Amino acid sequence: MTAIKICGITQPAQAAAIAPLVDYLGFNLWPRSKRHVTIAQAAELAAAARQGGAAKLVGLFVDATRAQIEAALTAVRFDVIQLHGSETPAEAHAIATLGVPVWKALSATPGLAIDGWPAAVLLDTPSVDRGGTGRTFDWAIATAARTRSPEVPVILAGGLDPENVAAAIAAVAPWAVDTASGVESAPGIKDLVKVRAFVAAAS
Image 1 (cartoon, rainbow, N blue to C red):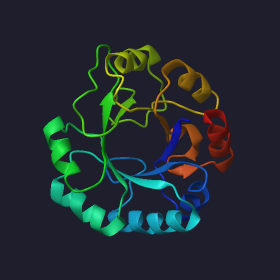
Image 2 (spheres, one colour):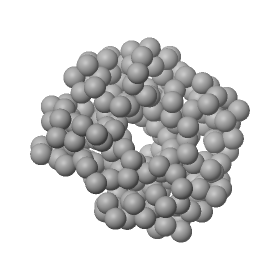
Image 3 (cartoon, rainbow, N blue to C red):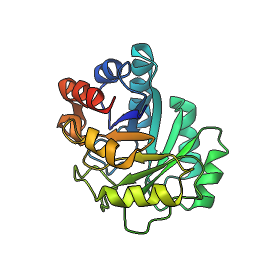
């Protein structure tokens, strides 16, 4: 069974509605993101999500300091930290000592090495905006990376939507799939019809 993550949640009501449907909800704490939320907003979203369902909560950071991440963990009680910046494996392992799994987002480029990170890796379309482009990449890159490092859990992202996620899973066999813009009506505003269709196609 492929795990499902919906990222870029910004509204408490939607957090509560989507939490029963998926395995993970992602909150983006990078100030430059179109889906950015503050730590206070993330705490409100987390409370709504936990009332709604059992989805684990993922905090997304870009080149944040350990102190910033630790403060967010204290306030929100994230289940997972997702790093989207220029963090090194050593830095990611250091953050993992805070006591939660650390996922690392990597730009999907040919020959990419995915081993050496603390937990899972997320493969996304290369972008100066650290993902969220709504564009897919060549899934053969992900398949090749998985073949080289079969022990590494791979989360497939980048332009996934209800129409293509089943094909993506068939092509790559990832541990999980992740979408943000593929189930939105506007940045940060999820379309629950699209969310349910994505979940059905990915299940």
